Length: 463
Image 1: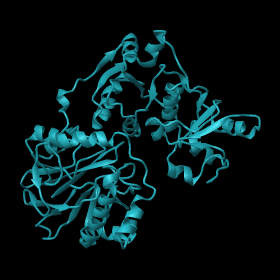
Image 2: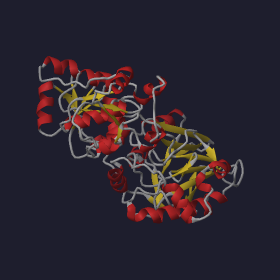
Image 3: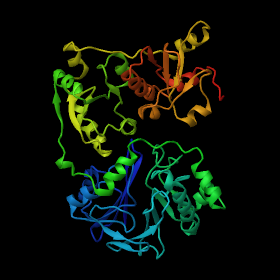
Image 4: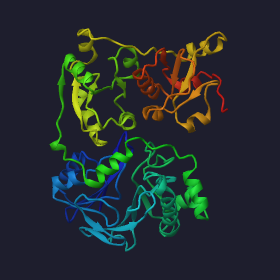
């Protein structure tokens, strides 16, 4: 038996491949949209991908089930329950998919979604009982899948289903059973997911809060308490994955655009996204551009921005990074990518079409401003509520960057200078760029953010 783990940075998503090497066949569970990693792995090991299994209708990434089936001829298996309309072979609780001599047995685990299936791996050569559980979004390390993604009217019912899944299904599995979750730390599909790649049923029963509740009421309270808002794009991808995404080959690749092309398209409604570093964006950027730096946080914040109804144009630190950025966008279904500014900001500056800046105010300078009783500078903290509650700058105003992306206006009455801060300087650049788009002026970003503030032993409060 072979088992391979495929981790997607930015989404903290994990797909799995299992294979019977002697039979030369493999199955992939929860593939992402760009499927070359799976087909290349199979080819390198002389394997044929015969089955693709979905645990549920995903909200955080575009499923690659259809893409992988088209590339390999594999059969797609998904839950018999739910309203998914993409082509698939339905699986009911207890039904099995053979992978050579191996077997994947469906285990209905509703709660995160109504249709959710986990898969028990059985290897008869080792023992008749399951040797692993691919838990999808039902069970993570130290956490369970959030039950609030289908709207308030379904949250209570799904949370109660999740309680029965935990107490009546997962708790009855063998303590030694190894669990391979669908996400690790960094995903918003659970409240506070651990970063270990695997866990066991026994470990979760001992240490996870979700296994300690003795009543549905207590469980619902524990699961929903402190639940952060989900990213904006989740309902959109639910619909995309329910019906099946467009094939990647059918999508336009976008093109290299001149500065004048970009200016004209922006005037026509296109959104310009500056993917360079926060410092580079602060030094000089196109008027009206939004910041979302290419890297580990890019997919998440493009998801918060959720510009699915607009063409996108990218500003890059190097033209050669366009395919990388395009892949990240397509993983979350942002398919309206018109192209990129050829030559980046050097070309834009040479065209004399206007430059804007986001001043940077380092932590020592910020502290000096705040120590001056005659200085009216306001600090806007755009971290999430949990980060804010652990400690923030005295007198700061709080408004989460994700809420600003959804249209919220920070509760700042005075239109004076505002220093925007987050943990590192990334989210504050996102938030500041959005506020500047809406006409806010006198904004500054705090590079290093609260990390730099605490490292300098400057005062914080939890009030």
